[in-house]
Length: 125
Image (cartoon, rainbow, N blue to C red; front, side, top):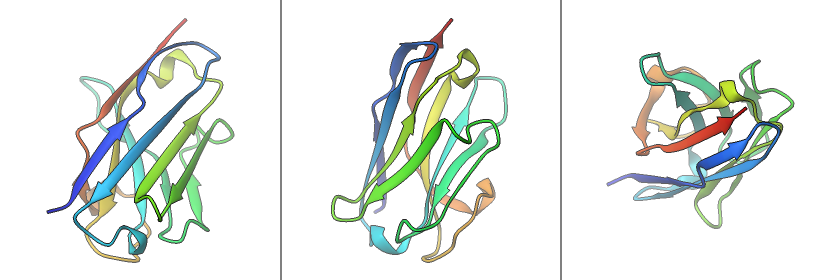
């Protein structure tokens, strides 16, 4: 079955950087868009970024544009989220996810069927 495993979270000071990774298995990674979402306990999960199957198209939430970069390496079945200039408000659990059908590029949470377990990011002020 499809498995998504995130890594790379941790504690960082404001202004610092982190790179999250998500490695997929159990399906043909290269034909699926991949997304990153985040959730603060007690709040709804929110979209962060999405990348097309080939990596040529990306989109970001306004709150992270210019600071976060999504990328992927289809030879490694891995999607990344490079985060710079981190702010305390970026503190959340970060999840990678994949839509339920190939070649479907979407930023809508409800379109994502496969989810990782999440990795925690804490930004101290």
